[in-house]
Length: 139
Length: 79
Image (cartoon, rainbow over the protein chains, first blue to last red):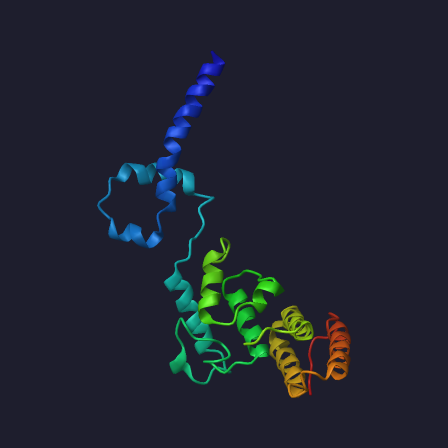
């Protein structure tokens, strides 16, 4: 009796799971475009995603924040060369010490800590953006 | 940028440690400590890449300096 109840609830949970996961995986930006969706599933999922759902930074947002940070960095003289493809050394004229400072400023901006090994591998705006987007706890 | 040698990585790692140590200082003097760390590293930026003896000496000296300036009793730095 108890076991059948357990099985039944497990089954219904499994049935419910893919639906709510699909909704959780949906990027934040896209939800804005699909406003007139049936309300019930999103309300149903709201209870689920309260605590565990990550902020999910979009690439554009990360890029914008890194750009602002670089614009305010006193060693970057030529801000006209600043774009997603800029290389810290070749395009922005930063030396390796300045690169360390930029990466540390990025750490502070997104409140994460980048281990030395990975920090040494970041040499361009694109690499930094990709790294931050891949970090689940960056915000 | 070319791949970094082990010694270059040590220097950058020390620089990173110094900048992290700056954040433990009082808010109003952090910029003094940051400028000091910056100038100390930039002072020797022209040391040859192959000048291992000098670099190792400077690294050792930098580590000692970091240790002594990390003391929480030191609240400000002036030059």
